[in-house]
Image (tube, rainbow, N blue to C red; front, side, top):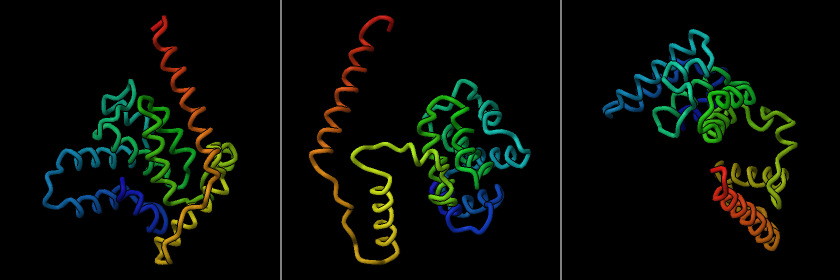
Length: 190
């Protein structure tokens, strides 16, 4: 997955399934990765056949949803990325349609596609709905800019400051939601 994000960020144009498979094979030379490489070969064949990610997941026996098991998650998210390299929204929706551990698979495919399309590739309505009080979209962008500057070789920077009491209030409120949800699950119907 890290290789996919790297290729998405550094390759001009779309990465072909064969390019990804060859790069992975080169990286894993000498490692016992036959099962993973066989799954990647299946991803390659499916993407080249223009199959949907959901149809591919069903072929893997995941019709009832993708589990968090690596050999389920990795091929499905790679398929979503290779099928929708310039369409973050399409990639995320496609893996969500597969069901199961879709919060994880959507986050993974979003990171892979996002590495290639950047902030401009995130659907504007998704960015407008980001709520993580007291963090704002502007605060997140400032954090990303400082991180990018640090990675690019500039001086290490501290994260933008937040009002500490607001963080405590947010966490207390979230704790209440979690406890209420947990207590509700103790009551019938189970």
